[in-house]
Amino acid sequence: MAHPVSYEATTETFDSLVLEPRDELVVVDFWGPGCPNCDIYAASEPGLLAELEGAPMRVVKVNAYEHEALATRFGLHGIPTFLLFLNGQRLGKMSQYYGKPYWLGVIRDHLPRAPTPASAS
Image (cartoon, rainbow, N blue to C red; front, side, top):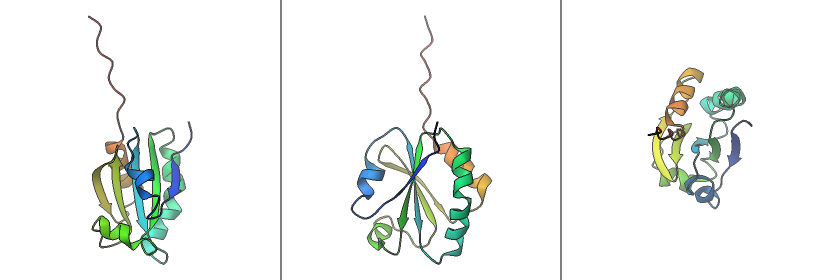
């Protein structure tokens, strides 16, 4: 399977990329140019996504400076901030980037699980 896909969202495209129900985790990365922690995450993102190959997820990036209305809509006070959504419902929030093991753990904890087959009677 392919690596999770990363999209750039705008105020106009955010709802369709993030909130429309689909059976995949959506990680929204609110970032900004000149943000050192945003740059650290951006440099590590390809490796992180490679480790999540085949996972039912997507990453949606939002430039918080260009789309300040979205940052305000979700009550963000700093960047980077990551919001987690599944089927249009907000599951959680990570403020800052605390490194690969932490990030992967949080993402894996929130990935949708395949339904367990009913046992045969």
